[in-house]
Structures are given as structure tokens and as C-alpha cells.
Image (tube, rainbow, N blue to C red; front, side, top):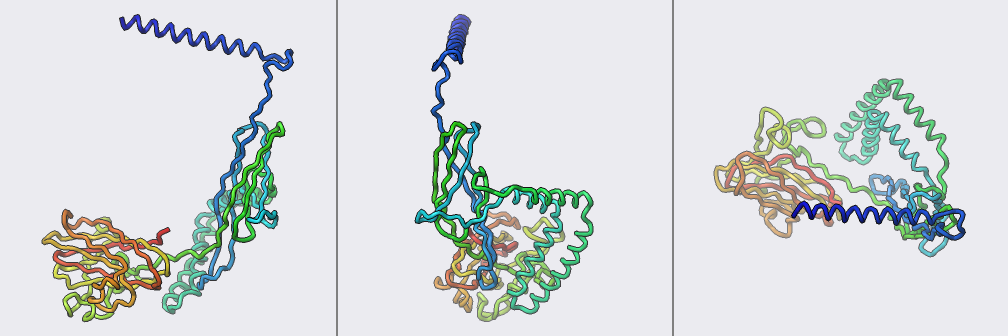
Length: 410
């Protein structure tokens, strides 16, 4: 019975194939250049234009967040529903009032590609040059004389490295760079008829961008979008947490015992028990890979007498994410609390007041495994503050902290 059904189904499919083939042949036979208006039907399908764009604006600000320069560049890519058929493109721009905008710069996208290829050939040199540029930009902003001296020494050392890196460039690398530079010089100027181009707008604002697409039959259509070019703003600097992994010699000048940046201003004021030393202890491992970072972590005895304290600079109005790792000895029930405090917090008692706590997180050792580190995160807003205090304290069980890090939340 099953075999009979298979034969019927096979014959049914064969009939469909034959019918389709006959129909195709019949239609094809009607297409003849000898018969006027038969078969050669006019193609009524016109182009449907669209385009995408990417903001590639670059800018630079000084220490006081004053704009030094800004390039409001956008990369535009045009397309249509017609993959072929001799499509042409035409771009046009107006301001929000509909007035034509012509005072913009056009950039051939191939220029950016060739510049990246040159940077790739000179990767080591470019990396050192960027490090030097970053330090030279940072140097005038550094008010601490000791830190400024360290920056100057770093620049001097990098300049020696740069000279050696340039001298080590191979003939092949130099030939490749020269080839790319020659290609840059031979590039055609970008035009408003290019399918892809980079446009540097004269200033921030709303612009109406028009794209007209025309096929080789003369049919065309137009599309438009409002593109908002935003004012360049300073990049929010990432705060610096000193000795974030509690490692020896990890301060800016190569000194430090892993605890120096985490000492409270006053033992008596910040002691959870009202007096005595509050300096954190250090837990060490003989080799890397055991702890989240390096070979040292902060240790907090089970009596809760030790605390970690560090004030860091932040940007008012910015939002941050701070991460860190904790572990427990698992000898008794315990917890570890890490807080972000307002800079005017002056004592341990003040640190318990809700008005001074910007954000906090308390983790217990319930369900934890002895000496196994777990990562945590605290998100907080700087508000009007230019600095905040990182404060950590524990109770009940010996605890450890390691690998603090902070990022700007975008």
C-alpha cells in the first residue's frame, strides 16, 4: 500500500514538472523581436533609493574641556533595489530651513582605508607615537610635580623606543608604505555623484540629506532624511584607582606596598571599633593566576577592624561602573560591604548615613566557596561631585578584595 502511494506521488510530481516546463517553453516562444509589442514588455520597475550613514566625528579638547578642533565627518553609503542596470547617484544637502548647504568638505573613503593600511604596516611605530602624544597632551594638565616628572621620564623613554622602532623598519615595509602613499596621491577627488563618500559638515545642526538614484533607462526617485550633527563633547576621562590590585610597586612612580593608596585619613575617625589600626592586610600567593590580579590581594580579618579607603576624581554628571572581586575564608558567617561615598564623608559613623552613601553593595559568604573569588559591580552617578570615596569594610568572616576597575558608562 505504501509503495503504491509513493508511485502515485512520484507520478503527480512528474506531471507538475512537465506542466511547468511546457508553460515555460510556451511563454518563451512568445518572446520574439519579429513581433511588435509581443513579449518585450516595458520594465516599469524604477529605482528605490536608500542610504545609511555613520558618525565618524573626531575632536580634541584641552585640560579645561575647551574645544581645540572638531571634524564633523559622516560616512554615507547609497544603495537601491537595483543591483545592476547602470545606477547613478546624486547627493544634495540643505539646512533645516531648506537652504542649500555647499560649504562642506568631501573625502574619498578610500583615503581612510589607505591611511589605516599605512598604520598597520607601521603598527609598532604608530603605537609608540600615540603613547607619546597621549602623555604630551596629559603633561600640561598634571598639577602634581612628582607625577609630571614621571610623565616626562616616560616620554623620554618612549622617544628612544620610537627611534629604535623607525630604524628597525624593513625595506619591504617601507616599500609598502610608499606604495600606499602613492595610491593616496592618485586618488580621485570625492564628488556628490559617488555611491559612497565622507562628508565633513561645517558645524553642528540639523541637515536634510537628499539622495537621487537614476537607472540607465532614465527613471529616478529621491529619498531624504534629517541628519542631526551633534556638538562634539569632551571625552569623559576614566578615573584612576591607585593600586587597584594591591600589588607592590604599582604606584605611578614604581613605589608602594599595595596598601598606601587605601589608608584612611584618620584611624580614630574611620575605625569601625573606635580606634586602633585600620590598615588592610595583604594576602600573597607565590605565583600569578591564582588571584584575579597579580600575586597580592587585600585581606580583612574577621574582627572587622580593617577598612579600605581611597578618594578618586570623577567628572560631575558622569555615570560609572566599578568592578572588583571578593573571596571569603568560610570559617563563620560574614559579609563584605563596598560603598561609594560623598567626598565630605569624614568618619566611619558618617559612612553609615544614607545622605553620604552614593551607592553600596553588601555580599555575604552564603553559598560561597573558600578562597574562590567572585566579581561584583557597582553602578553610580557622580552627580555634582568632583571626587568620591571608595570605602570597604567587612564583618564576621575573614574576607579578601582584589582587582578594582572602573569604566565610564556610555
